[in-house]
Length: 343
Image 1 (tube, rainbow, N blue to C red):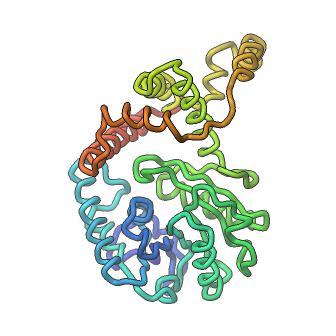
Image 2: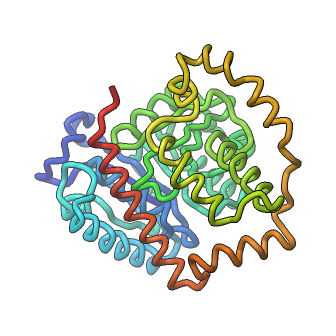
């Protein structure tokens, strides 16, 4: 669990200038039991909350898992400092001083304003965690899940504090990719959505509000649409796996790093209406040629895997090195985007 309570004595955490009266605790807590505490998502949440000046409490049922997570966070934040990529206005030592661990769930959540769950994507496990939290939290704390696809109506069913529940789905890796999807339960209070949105903005993320829940949310629905057609094109012998990836990385992806598909349409003609007038018939013709949902199995899996392994062998060492290269690229892109102010 990650928890944020208050600024340490003498710290200059500017976020705390908005704290309640002395003695009242302000915090933000991600919940990460042992199977995911040391994972990328959980560590990233802890680092992001600390970058905003929030005191963070990590919870786990095993002390060693907490110790390992704290050590990994220290190493990662030191590297971020060295590369000039550390977020927030506080020094690395100030941010690290805000992060601690706790093996008692009741103590971990005491005084928190936000609890962020980061356990594996298992509905029954997540429901068990939220049922436990539901019995010990007050009427003010926000209960948030990092789920990437589980519907809030199933995740939070039957909870007494359902009005305080929301899904805040980050994008991997969250420290470099700021998007967070906010998905409410049908009974989630508007204030819960507003407060979560404000908190995400405070820690430098880019929250988007889904007006209602839908399977896959928005990001994964868009991602799966691209993956599906990419798979059909390779399976059908239209293009190689390597060249397919180049179409995205050196084509669509370069545009989409700065503007989305709808603004792209708007700019590629004399506005959206003009674009639809000019290109709608062609788009509909091509869309009608799309095939069925792929099975993602059999000979195509073997073929794509061979193509991918020629570029990046699938042993742990090569995969880790490629992920690090990806994260370094994302870090540089994040710096560039922060320097390019939208008009």
